[in-house]
Every structure is written in C-alpha cells, then in structure tokens.
Length: 282
Ligand SMILES: CC(C)(COP(=O)(O)OP(=O)(O)OC[C@H]1O[C@@H](n2cnc3c(N)ncnc32)[C@H](O)[C@@H]1OP(=O)(O)O)[C@@H](O)C(=O)NCCC(=O)NCCS
Picture: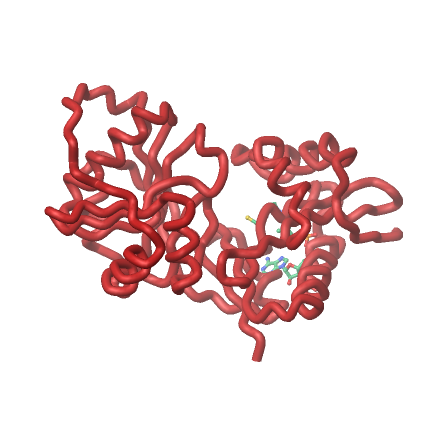
C-alpha cells in the first residue's frame, strides 16, 4: 500500500464527507465548517491517500495563543488499524516543528481507547476530564418574560482583567464546539475581540458565550461566574433570539458546583466524560 499525506483541496470535499460519515456516528460537521477548514492557510486540513483513495482526514488548527488543536481525525473503517492515524500524527509533528509550535491538544471520549492510545503513543498526556450538558430549546418551551439582565460586552482590557481574576477556579480550559482552549491572556483577548465576553456589572456576573463555528446550531457557554440563574436565563434569552437549537456547556468533571447548577437549570448531562490530551515541547 502506498500512503500519501497532503493538504486537502476543495475537490476532496465529497470524499472527505464520506470518510467522516463512515468513521463516526452522528457529529457530522465537515460540510458546515468547510470554508473555515479548507481555507485555513496557517493550519491544515490534511488527507491521507492510500493507493490514490482518500482514507482519512485530520485537521491541525492554530488557537488564539499559537498552540495547536488537533481535530476531526477520521479514518474510514475499512482502512483503520493500518497506520493512517499514525501518519496524521507524524504530519502534525512535522508542521509543529516547522512552525515552532510548543503545545498541541486533542480531546476524545473517555472510552475511545484507540484515539487516546494513539495520542499517548506520540507523547501526549491526559491533562483533564470534562462532562458536557445540553439544553434543547424545543424541550424547554417555558415562556419566560424577556428580562433586561444588564449584560454588556467587554472590551479586551476589561475582559482580561475580569477573566484573569475569576477563571482560576473554573478548570484548565474554556470549551466551545468541542474545542478546548487553555486559559491564557491571548484567549481572553481573542474572545473579547469576537464579542463573546459578557458582564453584568450590577450583579458581578461574568459569562463567555458564543460559538467557534456553526453559530446557527448551538450557543456555547464556555465559562461563567456569578448568579447561575441569572446567567443561564440570559443565555437562554440569547439562544431564543439567535434561533439556535440548543445551549451546550462543557465543564470540568470534578466541578461539583457547576454540575449542580447546570442540572438545576434544566440541562441534561451527556452520558460519559471527555478527556483532553496535551503535548508540550520539552
Ligand atoms: C482513532 C482513529 C483515527 C485511529 O486511526 P487508525 O488509522 O485506525 O490508527 P492507526 O492504525 O494509525 O494507529 C493505531 C494506534 O492506535 C493505538 N491503539 C490502537 N488500539 C488501541 C487500544 N485498544 N488501546 C490503546 N491504544 C490503541 C496504538 O497506539 C496503535 O499504534 P501501535 O499499534 O503501533 O501501537 C480511527 O480509529 C478512527 O477514525 N476512529 C473513529 C473516529 C474517532 O474516534 N476519531 C478520534 C477523535 S474523536
């Protein structure tokens, strides 16, 4: 068998979507994020060809802080177990060396032993465990009166100040669209630039809310601190206004207070934990 790893081209879209559909049940999004993935010139959507046929896809993405997020690694089941996943990791490291990247991260389901094993084989270590929870708007038809909660968007400087102060007890990452962002100043400023950091000064309530991509489908709570009732109610109002299907939050699995608040607000926990694996250049 002859393997070839290369950057994906637009003409690969259909076959890449086929690979995605064959490799995972549900969670298909490649077509929806195609513009962002195929046009990414700093990062790369890669494909592995076996004897001229695309057998796998994988995305290498730069985050706000210059670290890299590995995502959408999918190998067509008929080609699995033949070293294609490893070929992608070698490519990711090649790019990281070329670009002087010092940190890479990925996530997978707690029970996805192949995906985890592959990352650990390449020197990644499990750094955190998370749990997702969702509120489906269709199942939450309660007519709430519109309330002006007083949340305002923060600029970079204000966001930096408040997130630096309030985020240390949250966990290691903010999560949007299953992208786990390590907490740092570049992230805080980037989120503020993209109008995702909200603050209610009177109640001292802080919220990071938005989407990395597919804003038409879900709204993501990446972080909050303060009165959860007020914060979740504001997020709900925003979700109604933006006409999304659901609100998602992913939080540190051992964060008992957040778990209780999320449940009290009517969210449903996802069935199992997610793990984040990270690699740091030594
Ligand atoms: C995960 C996935 C990308 C791996 O691709 P692959 O081409 O099958 O993987 P490879 O054959 O290159 O790599 C196999 C490596 O995985 C690891 N691995 C495989 N089975 C394992 C197991 N049961 N336990 C631990 N590690 C295991 C090993 O490190 C192995 O390498 P080795 O045999 O040299 O030690 C592929 O299985 C897939 O597409 N799965 C469905 C989608 C998915 O889960 N994506 C991951 C992100 S959520």
